[in-house]
Length: 251
Image 1 (cartoon, helix red, strand yellow):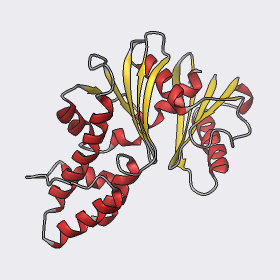
Image 2 (image 1 turned 30 degrees about the horizontal axis):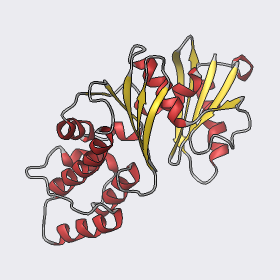
Image 3 (image 1 turned 180 degrees about the vertical axis):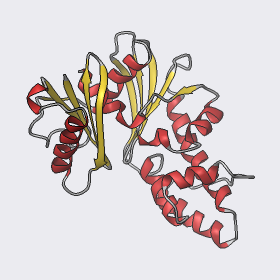
């Protein structure tokens, strides 16, 4: 048995894997003490499966905090971890991975051997990430999941023209002041981030199957918006938030 721990900027995830299958998992907010949270999710995952720490042969960490977790036997980048997991989840096929996290968005091309061919990362600006939607959701007095649910009820999505999260926030405030419906604003925001993701996808082979993972994959309406804008089918695996941790455990 192996454990994979993804210490992300927002959430920390752990999976315990036996014979390439997830037998237990746990998740918690990373907060201000990510190493302690990593210890907690590891212990939670072990307790959930009634496993002793001594039974774990190897612990692999990944994510922003991968170097701070001292019990790890090795570390792996989140790009390599996402690629490894997507390769297994796609039936060991070539694929394109979309990983939308709190602080960055990645598109990763994976070859027939499960190796990274190339990748793009948006990590210099909040626009195009989960943090962007979180900021906008606060303006609409909801969370990112409520934002997604609002978007599914839109009658006429607005166009969010700003490519900067700060200016986009001002744009949303102005729309609210002009009595625009929250549902239409939410749909415009979802479409805005989907458009940025679609642009990143265009740099890669359009024939590749697409695997969507990360916290962004569980936001209602985002998958459908990306599919519509990119004109491509997208697959969301079971437990998309744990995909990168799974890839770490497989390494």
